Length: 116
Length: 113
Image 1 (spheres, chains in turn orange, green):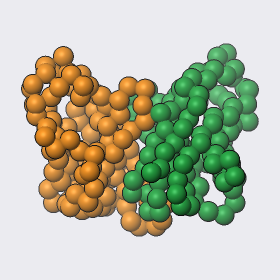
Image 2: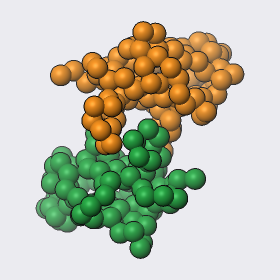
Image 3: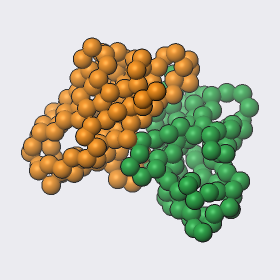
C-alpha cells in the first residue's frame, strides 16, 4: 500500500512569490491534515479536512495561506505571497475512521520550503 | 489547553546502551498519548500509543513507554539502542479520536559506536 505522497520534496523561492504544495493521501483515508514544522520544533496543525470539508482551520493564516481538497482526495496548500518566515517543512498526513478510536495519522515525507 | 514538554533537546547514547526519553504533558481530560519518530528527510512514524488500560505499552522497533498519571509523564524506553535508532523523537497528546495532536519540540537522539 502506497503511503502519503507529497510533492515537491524541496522548493526554493524568493519572497513575495507564490508557492503550492500537493498531497495525495493513502487511498480510502477520509481525513487529511496539513502541518507546519519549523526547524527544531514539532509539527503544528494548520488545517484538517474531513472528506472535502475543512473542519478545523483555526491555525491557518488566512491572509496568505489557502488550502483545498477537491473531491475529498488530493489536497493543495498554497502560500501567496511567501515571506521569509514561511521557510519550514510542510507535512501532510491522513487517517481513516475505520481504525476506530486510535485513528492513526500517517505522515508524508514533507515539503521543505526555503524562502530567500 | 493541551501541551507537551520534552525537556531533553539532544541525547547521545552509546550503541547497545539503554535509552529513556522524557515526556511530560498537560491535558484537562484523559490524555491520548503518542510517540513518533522522524528520520532525516522522512515523515513521522508512529512508534506506540496509549489510550487506556495497561500503563506499559509496547511499540515497534523494541520501544516501550510507561504512562504515569501522577507524574503526568509518558517516557519512552528501549533496553538496547541500535545505530539505526538515531533520529528525532516526538511525544504528542491528543483528544479521543486523535483529530488534533499537540506535539512536543522533539528530542534528537545520537548514537555513538
